[in-house]
Image (cartoon, rainbow, N blue to C red; front, side, top):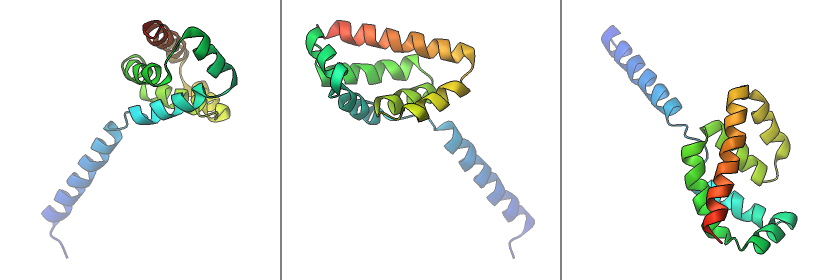
Length: 122
């Protein structure tokens, strides 16, 4: 049987690992964002809009991932990725849990991202 100090040491290590794991949740990766963005850009109105605006999909999506990482919280980025994947109900459920301030930041961030990234691609 481990000694009391060994048990405390193991618990301390376990607590640190859990805390670090929780702190590492930075939302979806840039590659997940880019993949979802590219897939969304190939559907219906999005495809037509990008073509009419002269937006290059991969450049736009890479820019969007970069901007989203700085403009949005991890939870908001997750909602955005789910929305781009066509999982509207899941995205909406996450959005409803955001505070009013975070919802406003999400909408402003989404518009800023589009403006910055679509504007660069013309």
